[in-house]
Image (cartoon, rainbow, N blue to C red; front, side, top):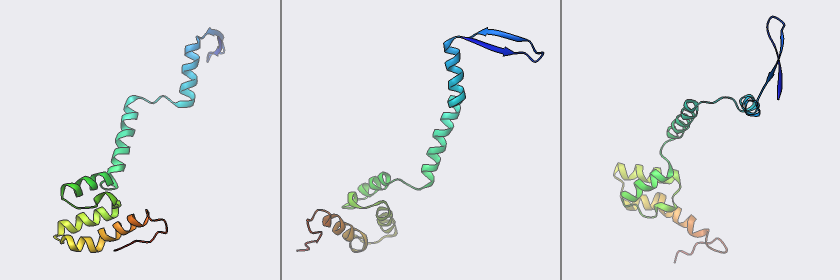
Length: 121
């Protein structure tokens, strides 16, 4: 390929350019020249943003499992956080069952019924 370059003094030069150089220039033009440091900084920034939202549901589930809370798999993130908070404040298992776990179990069971009714007996 041939490229025409104009010098500041007004001279015109014809320069031979390889296909690899042309591809490299086009890539820089459209995708930018991101270095590895920038990519690593992006990963760190995403990790910090994720951490600022609080613990993940998986972290809460593992904590609930280690504390012996039953039916932890069917609780959503908010319910898991509430149960762990109640457990830490010294609430009994019966209180946690009545307030959080039992409604979640009923909600989960109703999803498996054809007519969406829960059979309590």
